[in-house]
Length: 388
Image 1 (cartoon, rainbow, N blue to C red):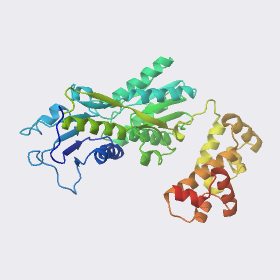
Image 2: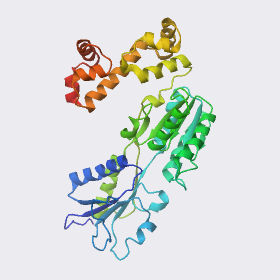
Image 3: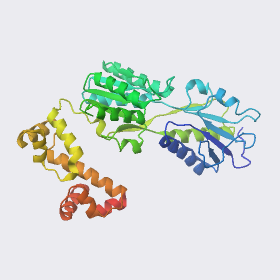
Image 4: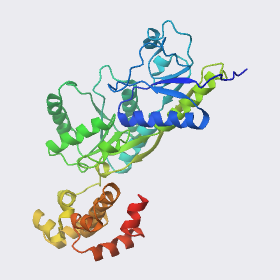
């Protein structure tokens, strides 16, 4: 028989995520459930120096908990308190110990990354694991699922485990030697986005071309990282908010005594967000690769096709023919795409005047740009900005 709540329940959230972005998404999922089905008084345990710490649970006793800590880790902290309904969220299976839990099933996303690389025509693969020792279960599971899917396709997978977790200067030299030794072209999957960024930074320093020699995909789709790497980082977008909503729903049922036996649910991922770091094209020549890199760096400086041909020391006609054969589009199309990509970002994310944005993106006249933008996007730049 279910129980009626006699007061607004106090809910303690202890999710300790790998990044602030993940924390926000998980918190948002819990808060969304509380808003729709509450009200709840939710306290998210963090290390902020600007608010009072929670301290002893004897002074603030929650009615329910959502945590990724194991029962053993919680035992001392909960000593002297009554039994608290608890949902283990993204805890390791051993930490949850058969109790009510919501787990992130990383297998489908890892398999999707492997399939995407294979479809692109790649035949060499690598996985970069977390720097933590021992390995977090989610890092091990991602790597094992990625490698298993590649074995299904008939391929192997090199695995890198960082050796200098406390010194990036030493670690980067070690990582650089490993990346240089990989057979190329190679599809590389990193355990999460900060690791993938370190891979991209190291490739840049070692003059390894991305994605032509190493195509890279990270995990968690932290846009602050992904949109600010060179090149921009492809990443798996996990459904953290949906998983947290499930955890809150289970906790609500526990607090109302609607669950009599342990329940285990899983959640997965939404999509792979493809950006430049994984846009590998088979059999791309060094000239086409060099042209793409030159365009990436200089598209908004008013460059023309002749400037790229001169930089690569080839004729314009030869460059155009190779580019069209490899990518199915012209050099001018690529320049235009990169300019418009920058222009759209500035429209969305700044309050700069439209005329100034056009000039910064390499357009000499605002009239031509207005016609081009309307033809490409079906709306004016002002309407695009307002919509964004």
